[in-house]
Structure formats: C-alpha cells, structure tokens
Length: 415
Figure (cartoon, rainbow, N blue to C red):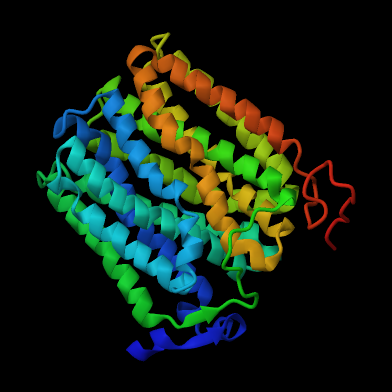
C-alpha cells in the first residue's frame, strides 16, 4: 500500500479483483462505519445537551432541525461540485467536514452558535449521504443490491452501537463532558475518512454520470416516495427523542441505552429485511413499512392522552426503526427503473426533494408542539397513510418502462 494509490484510477471490475479489504465494497463498508460514529454521538447527546446547556424548548429544537435540513434541500449542489470533484473524493471530504463540525459542537452552547455549527456538520452529512447513495447504486450489482444494502445498514448500526455503548459505559463512570465526547467521536470520523482517501484507489464506474440536473417524468413515483419519506422521517427524528427527554425525563445514559437496544435489533434485522425485499419485492416491503409506521405514530399520539408509561414509548421507538429499515426498498426500486447514467444526478435531486418538507416542518411543528404534541404525531400518521397509498402504485417487477402500475408496458419478471 502506498499513499500514491489514492491517486490511482481503476475500473470497477479491476477494483473487484483487489483483495477484499481494498475493494469497492470494502470502501463502502468503511464509509458506512465512519459516518455514524460522529452522527450517532451527535444525535445521542443532542437533546440533553440543548436542554441542559442551551435551555432549548420545542420551538428552539424545531429551528435547529430546520437549519440542519437546509443542506439536504440544497443537495442538488452536488451536481455542480461533480463538475470539479470525483464522487468518491467528494464523499470523503464531506465525511471530514461532518467529523470536524461534530467535534466543535460543544464549543457553542447557544442557539446562534449551535445553528452555525449544525449547518456545517449538516453540509458534510447530507453531501456524504447523497454521494454515498449514488456510489452504492453504481457499485453494487442489481441482483444483490437488497442484500448488500442490508449488510451495509447493519455495519452502520454496528458503528452506532459502538458509539452508544461507549457513552453508556463511560458517561457516568468517568463523569465525561459533552465537549470531550464530541471531540473524540468527530475526530474519529474525520481520521477514518482521511485514511480511506490514502488507502483506496479511485474507482471508475462503468457508466459515466450526467453532470446536469435530471428530472424525468417516469421517475415521478420515486420522487413522491422520497418527498413523503423525508417529511415523515423528519417528525420522528425531531420529536420522538425529544419526547423521551422532555416528557419522561430520560438522562443521557438512559436515552443512549434506548438507542443501543434499537441498534442491536437493527443489526440483526437489517440483513434479513434486505433478503425480504429481494424475495418479495419493493411494493410489499413499502406497504408493510407504511402500515406499521402509521399505527406507531397513532400510539405515539396516545402517549400524551393516556398514562401508558415510558416502557411503551421506548418499545415503539425500537419498532419504529425496524420499519424504517425497510426504506432501502426505495433505493432498490429506483435502481431497477433508472438509466445507469442518471443515478448520480437523480440521487442529488431526490435528496433535495426528500428535504423539501424537512426545511419547514420542524419549526412549524415545533410551535404546534408547544400547544399539542399529540397533534404532531397525528400529522405524522396522516403522512404515513399517504405514503401507503403511493406504495400501492409500485409494480411487482419494476424495470425501465414499468415504473408504476399505470405504465403502458408490463415488465416481465426477472429470470
């Protein structure tokens, strides 16, 4: 291995012949591990940090997440950057930015300071996610995509579990500070990204990607699913964890322990769900996901009406993530219907669409939260119902020309 290898460009087929630890799949695996180390730590400490150190209320946390989602809305800028930077390099640079900004988070315990540092970390996170999704769909063979994506989800869950376990074991035992934990986790992500740049060659995908914005009418259902997914997931990300701290008084080690249990379940379930999607298809997987999420959000709403206790809230949190894991079916659905050269620009466009609602929903629902947390979760349940309706339009065997059940040409099942 030499540092100069990072400047070597080789085809994807050549890369697959390298030892596994230097292969394209290995790079995707390391990246899948590196990102959650910073992001999971940031998420685990956030609600306690902003309440204890910055005095946040529901509207403040809503504004913070609105700012956090702005770079997701602007993910279409990736297309412009790809005119000058290779996708693989852009993904690793984005990981470095995420790590550095996470390391600096505790230095700014105020609304204004946190908005700025969160914006920077979010640029890193969302640009990484956009490029990573594109690379996954280009580098993974279609016939193995659901299974491999499930394994990559499990690797990310493992990294998140490691971060959570470290917090649970050491937070009280060593009286750790927010500052120290953010520095360690953010620094680890940045260093892993730099190591990837030095170790791995630049892999050349077989289909050169378009460097212009791609909006195709035949992808409309994919765009709609992305929009609703972003809106619905945003409500959960902003308010489910916040509820555990605000309503049930969870402390840092307790909320992190809940996240740990969630991740252990996801590590076991994600590969299985990948095989399920491959066996039964995207349509059924998405229908099951949205039906389950709708029921869960209704029960979340009930937690503010009935005295059901924190045990049910914690259980719903875990089950919610199981259903969320089925969202990999949206990726494989697009992979099956897309022109190969459309993947990178469409990933950027889809990420922007995914974050349209995420830009305005957090602060609007943050104000609604002040008067009725129940109403916030009822809104989420309604969105799950809309998503369920859209999932019914996914054909059993999606291919180009058979993107929806309304398509004029019926696709034949794959042999």
